[in-house]
Image (tube, rainbow, N blue to C red; front, side, top):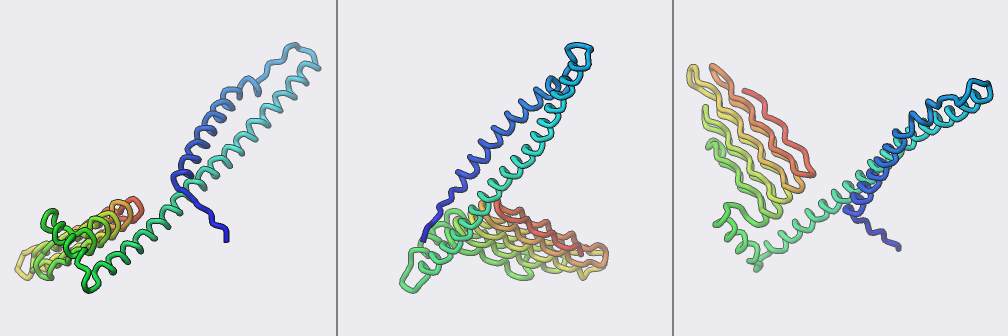
Length: 245
């Protein structure tokens, strides 16, 4: 079986080089447009006029062909860039699976490596090396914990007590999705506003989607605002905003 090795960086470099070549050719074509299309007749006789018209038609044909080849050139560059991104996304997906397998192996009975590393990281930075962030407790408005530095999803924010804002979702590290924001608590007091929904956590810096914003709580006077969706990573989508109360 034959294997093809694709380097996304090489595709990106090739696309950049081709774009530079296309820019030079486009500038050169534009520079000769007037001299080759609007050709003045060297004399007033019919032969000179016919020759001038012929070369002018050649110039117009060249400009038309150059325009079409320029479009094909742009399409080819777009295909190269798109291919590079697709291969990179596939590699990121494979990396996620490998990290998940590593986490499973490290958490087997008798394997204390991950637990020790996570405990040290939590004490120093408030987030693990690998693993999901803790969810905020319901009814507390507690923020969700951040996911691991390398891999892990952010924890969901806790819902708010009556009239209290919901907790923000935790952010992911390198790879993972942001946690959802907690729902704002509904107000039970006359004239009391509902709590706002928590903000969704940011997706992983490299790959991951942002968490959805929490819904705003209802109020006897005003409902709470929905929380903003979290920002997506380099390869990921932003989270949806929460509904207002």
